[in-house]
Length: 345
Image (cartoon, rainbow, N blue to C red; front, side, top):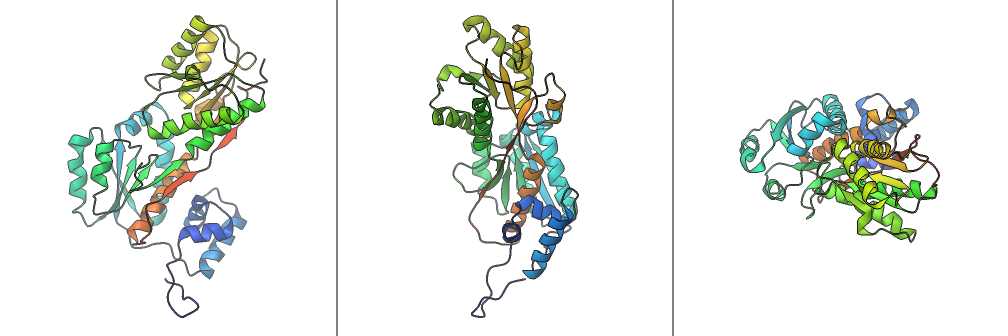
């Protein structure tokens, strides 16, 4: 329903973001409050509901009973098997879809050159309202989807040309928070362990560098350690090899993902280095298993469920015909302190 402006003309349609801003809560919290999902305090739920009522806001119904295609890249499918990041993103997405009466149809996109045909067929299906692309960086695929006649939102990925809307964690500020946490404990030589290739991971590299530059610390190229895959054993080998070749020339490790952090701790143990007495370790993602390693891992929490739910809400805006430009939403991250960080020796 449109609101009426002071001159009697209808103003733009009230959006969920308006309600979230006026209530002082996140977009995902407002979404979950109106959807009746668990995990929202009663007073916040009541405040959001009252604000929605006062603004004449109604949950979109134009796509109820319709379908959204979730195209999962090979990277996303591999992560789903190995880790739980993708799992939790899907969990948030499916919970939001269920609340809105929307069906999520998954399509694997292992090879964009061969799998694009199944998506093009969905363009002719009136039941398909739009597309979500999960963990997609392939430039050829992005070029094709920019020409789709139906809305597209990238989930845990971004479009460098800003022609497609996207939802990601704020990887750069999240990684900077991890590095700043180590600096607060007196660490000055901080390795960054990563696998290069994805733009979102490059943002994490930039966040590590931002923190070191801000504090006037070395961020030389030799402090960035690269591995060929996200497997913990490769991270363990990389850390053990560095110590064997160069000695213990660092006091802390920040990794681009929790799996690498777990591997880094194994590599340190192999070299006879104690965590956190000799070297501190911080991961990124806050996967459930990080609370059960020895010592429990300090990490940067990524709002995985909220990424999925927010992406669907962003797509619904486009489906409902809002003529807004493409948007890049980045969700805030925060440190989860456990026992893998100590004072610099």
